[in-house]
Length: 344
Image (cartoon, rainbow, N blue to C red; front, side):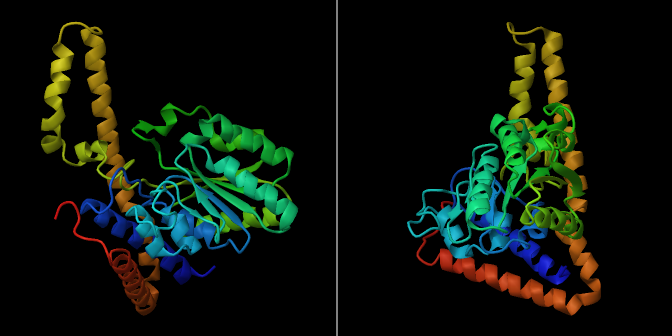
């Protein structure tokens, strides 16, 4: 395990997404933007162990894994700008990125990464013995029918498949534990699959856990399931109103509380107690989001590795500078023929 290399890949993923955030804030990128900030340790710990011929199927938060996989940065940025020379001709956006060269496919359809990866795994089992497939998915997606069907077939067909399930505690604006029954690890085990949990903030722990499952798949011992707990640092999407409300309750509250209170006391609809209960529930979710956000920032996975490398400060500073230069060059290339953003 090469910690400086893992740190470099985590930093590349974070720096790329911060660049995307800046482009989005300046109006160069339109529509919703779902970042994977907080998932860098999972992406680096898993994807650095993949080789040529290994398939990779991802969710709408695909950037960290694609960056680590080695997909060229400028074409990815050009894709987000809607350019014809983007990675997918400007038609995929940030949720539907594909790279045939890297056998990487992403989808905004919840749960779709599992059957996609199963297809990669099936092909590899027939055409490229020793090659595997990895699916990244979210905890909420494990409640989708196609996800459960994939678990079943993966075991029945003994596919060389590793499923990385990321649990950040949220399903959009709903807490995960309120919509998922039982344990996801036990659910996977119920299909006869090897399954375990890992701290997704700790890149070394992820690397070790994934290494066992990847080797197992390569040796023809079937699929496995790794549940990685990690933070969601920027909400469901950039500009997430739940995060804005949690961070600036007074300023943001002025925009919505008038309407909310008016609906509570208006005639018609549910009973007053029910409506008041709904407001209480909304406030509870906001408070949880605020506590969660504060705690997650303190547990930033990149900060943890940064501190660990204090004994190698010179090497760390060199990596920081090289990554910054790489991202700056990619952004400059992507914007070479683009005018001012919509905010001028």
